[in-house]
Image (cartoon, rainbow, N blue to C red; front, top):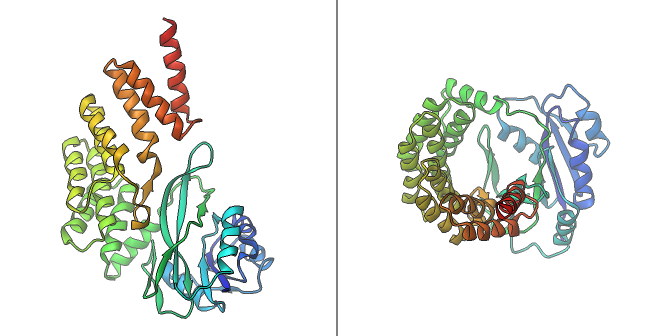
Length: 358
């Protein structure tokens, strides 16, 4: 049996903090809140759940704030969450059960982080994060933004998910400004920082700058495999946005230098072929996507739709364009088996019904 400290950093989170803390409930034996300068009711809400509410002056560095919050923990393991994260009832119960089991064979527990959901609330975008860490082992958060825990512990994987349920209406430039400030100070950027900086530039439609940063990151040869593959995909988006589909295709296929194809990449390649109305080529890549296994525990960003629903629904379109209605219907049925309430699947059913009436 082990005990858990929930450690969080917050700022102006009155809209979601109570929801998060209620969802955790008695899975946490202690709650530590580091507030970095709230001007709303965040501190008052936090005080309803714990007397360990600390003020940590914002330094422009998320790792420093997280390391501070972790330093206040007193239990065996530390669990971290953001204010707009929640545990489902089932996942909270699973964590409570896990706490009752022996913990002498692990120091770090990786858990899936679900950040996008379909029309039925099923996760369709996930990746594993180090979510529980033994307080007594050497570890530290690193990175000003998109921070990560660097540790020397024994790691296991648990199917206990955390849901990210943001209520924000737009994507802010906060992260980009942090990276720009880091560069202005002349602070060194790790390969991981360079990848995420390039991604932030893309998010903010700074495509020429993003391409330069991502190409430098890939050319360095120092990136982690999954970051390299994702960088190729984002680089392809930049080329597409700047009107160069050939370069977009080249960026995607260059990801095969780093590892075996991912279904996500195959779907992106297929989409480019579809835009060129080369449906046979698109079919090849979508069918390949359907055959590839997911690699959830490898650390990649996993788009679940790319391993079932998306290739199937697009294969339906491809075969319809080629005049093969039977195959089109078959792939639409396959899509529906993955997401029975998806609007595209239901619209296709209506489309085929109308065709049969004519």
